[in-house]
Length: 317
Image (cartoon, rainbow, N blue to C red; front, top):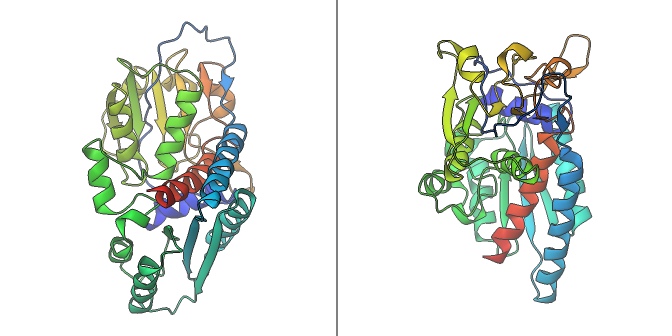
């Protein structure tokens, strides 16, 4: 679980790298008449995230008129550089939208008991509407136990078992931010999901599984691929929507993509030369796909924007 969270951090902080050993996968996509020679439409996550933040700012103003100011508390433990950058980005986004934020910092020697006590206090604080435990935590701490200590109504990451269960039942209020951001990108692009074949590469509880459930809710036919999947390329070539979320640089090649497909790249990987690359070979695949997200600037900005939206939603409940 730690490596996947680290990869999400790298994506979101523009300095993160994912390292799960999974196969390429697809996301729900729409069958589109798009010749291989036609360049794909680039899905601009930065622009859409800015629109989401603007909407959040308006909602915060309406809540303020009722005497409510959404509050976000972040718990940061250890000395992971990407975590520190990501937390700073969150604080900046909160300031921009009017969400009150507080960061509780702990060293790498923090005890699990100390974190659980802090979470209990935040659960009881009426001025805190969202609690986010920044991962990864120091290795000796049971991350799942800490995450489960967060009150489900304040779990704006959507990682609590109660919120994941609600997602399975189709009754979710707080959905994991990265899958929610992916869905918003697809919907904003006008890609049809109903009846289409979506392939998701990656089966984590952070991205792959929640995303598959969200796609199912939109009536897509969903295939989840992973490290044991046989004939991966055959499956991805059938995808109308292909989502790669495994943390392997340029895993998805042009030969693996159906012409006109919607390709969403959730991964971000730092290469030996210091540059960033997604799980998709962007330069090659953009000449085959109908839509594609860049790295950086695609899914990453949407994750923080949807985190703020979840915080405001929690304050409104």
